[in-house]
Length: 554
Image 1 (cartoon, rainbow, N blue to C red):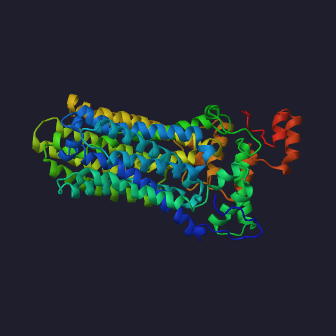
Image 2: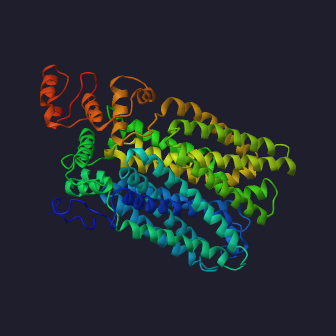
């Protein structure tokens, strides 16, 4: 991990890239957001290329063929799915840094494959392979980056930082839309070769930055590298290595890992861990994260983002040039609305943003399909208003939240795998929606938007009853929310609402109460629990304290 060979005593104030504290946190956020800027750029890239005459001349199979157009666009999600599966299997072994570096490198290889396509030389097959390879790299990055950002952030700004990261998806899409529009005037192969090649710049920046930034302190401690983990905690918090603040933060992280069975002496996390409940509620928390990604995709976002220019051409009857311009304007709205999440995420909280966004998206889709029913061009302009309103609500809420929520809702033992499952869910349904949207528009027209309106209506009660608030909570406090809900047999939303924000000392006491603390000082309590028959000997030897109020030690 770079310069980690130093001893704790020899360097009481470690630095990375010459930075520590807030400056180091900014550097981590900058590189993480660059990775998501690349994600957003690639997300909007094909919308302006897929119907370009120059692109169709190089890949004739895409000309006037909605099915092949959908396949070329959507096959990228298959690669992303494969990349997320790779992180699910190997991410915890590789670590967050190496996963991100590898993902960006794979994206560059995919970019080269796409740029070197020539008509008459199996161009269709090569382009599809290039799209898949690029997708693999992006799937790896979108699985690893949110976990890395969450584990390197403080609770007070974790939501903000990951929302900024998520919002850069919109900026990346904005760049790709207007770049596509600008090069469309060249009327040469630059119309599509240059925009595809340009994405390599973001990947190179990501690789360069990650070569010098630290590994996640939680991952290091989970792998038994306590000296290295302590160095990173010290650097991130801008405290001395042996200061009380550094040692307290390290202890809380270690306690959380011990309670979840994550430490150098325990078995590594397995797939079966994702399906356990008890006080850690691994399975429930995985479902919450994956559910957020599912709802993001099935709510209709990529039907609008990927196909906005085509929607304006086919559904509203605009020219290709005007459709590209309106697509670019829509992305400006998208980017501005995404920035509002930076203010609201820690003020309104996750739950309110989820609910407001879902309600807004539902109403926007209702406006869109209602204006398309008459079949006149004048009425169809109202559908354009609906699409603009949809992207504004989406950008302000559902764009960043599904990347933030899984990264913070899952515990350290399963965070890497559970976040990968969430990302797999995203790409699986991303592929489905992108693939079927042209077919739905061709076969049922305005019914496409009715379908998305109904899906958003279904999501409202799910969010209200099952998604607890995590605003301004440390990752260890979130563990306590689920332990409290399990022990007290209460709804987890109510458990979160009834639990006040906690200090370091209060977290330690609550961890002890709900059986989440590993502490040699609690031997007397363990002995009392053992004599009362409330705990097993195996638990006592592991040092896991189980409160008398916790009816299950599963």
